[in-house]
Amino acid sequence: MTALELDTPHGPARAHIDDVGEPAGALVLGHGAAGGVSAPDLAAAAQAAREARFSVALVEQPYHVAGRRSVAPAHQLDAAWIAVVEQLRAGAFAGLPLVAGGRSSGARVACRTAGAVEAIGVLCLAFPLHPPGKAGDPSKSRLPELDAVTVPVLVVQGASDPFGHPGPGPHRRVVEVPGNHSLRTNLDRIQSAVREWLDELR
Image (cartoon, rainbow, N blue to C red; front, side, top):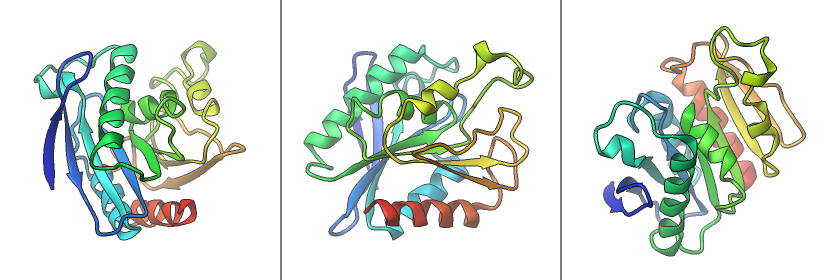
């Protein structure tokens, strides 16, 4: 795996790239608000992608690279993500169909920017549908971010996730696995769900 520092409008980001031989595509994954790219579900998704002959980039947002604990505002996350993907498309992933994704906050970024980065699919691990305890407040729902994606979406969600459970949609498949928002268990089920979905996208 190769680590690259990439310039963005909000400081340097870091992409950890794992190339596969003769890739069928590329999967770019972002981390959650408080965690990094070593999260177990991200590792499971990356392994599934390699098995499906997708090269992988695990992307650290600039605030995380800088060691800041508080997450950056959404517009900064989105701008940095778009800048990273554009540079990957011009370099390591040139000419490859690209799937965007991430866990929690990273999944939201991937949804909001799917059109801008011309993703052929979006992978959402532990999508935070609403803040805990706010299921009844429509103003707190992030469902519009999911519904706005017009390419195939896979959501892998823990059955006891306090951030809610998105339903399936016209372009959206939802796979529920035992566990909570951390998705630290049943990694084999996460891996198999991602692998099957990526195989269908190829």
